[in-house]
Image 1 (spheres, chains in turn purple, yellow):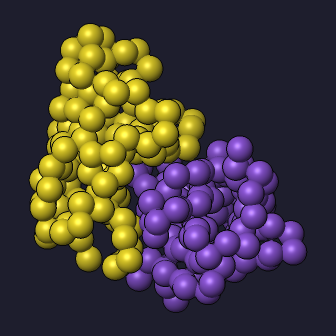
Image 2 (cartoon, rainbow over the protein chains, first blue to last red; image 1 turned 45 degrees about the horizontal axis):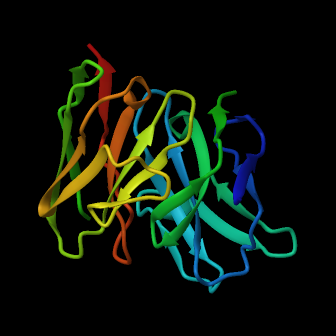
Amino acid sequence: QLQLRESGPGLVKPSETLSLTCTVSGGSINSNNYYWGWIRQPPGKGLDWIGSLSYGGSAYYNPSLKSRVTISLDTSKNQFSLKLDSVTAADTAVYYCARANTIHLWSYWGQGTLVTVSS
Amino acid sequence: EIVLTQSPGTLSLSPGERATLSCRASQSISTSNLAWYQQKPGQAPRLLIYGASTRATGIPDRFSGSGSGTDFTLTISRLEPADFAVYYCQHYGSSPPGTFGQGTKLEIK
């Protein structure tokens, strides 16, 4: 059974970089059949897609975040990561990692991790 | 970019009743790349329906999806206590971002 688990700091200072890692178990990220991505959810609000990346290198980013986001794969560790630069309080959210069988169709999710941006 | 608008914002029903949730797209989703997710408090979303009407693995048949073009519906035929949650529709596929609707909260009346 595929499992995904987010990890990283729960508190980030304004203007700094948010860095999260998603560890995948029960399956390999070395497959061009899937997309690996990040979705976030501000407290009490809806879902906001951040970006997606395939093993083959196809990348998609939310235009509203594109200038600040990098998603990358580490096949040696079966992990993928998110970096979000120059964060503000508006970036406070639960961050989910997920796998899509078809681009953006999220069939497997991590449990989510809350990241708070505050000094 | 396709914008998805869900209605109603909140739906209050009793167990055993039928729920009908709507999702309207700002432009036609020509290949029916429309999905529905369920999210319970403190949990990640769960994929319910894709291709507008195909249930994901393990989803009970009281959940059904329908629609095409710009108008889509999620129907829950007989509500059970576990079904009270927030439901999101989503457009997926190779073109721009996998937009989510703003959600419909299904609450116990």
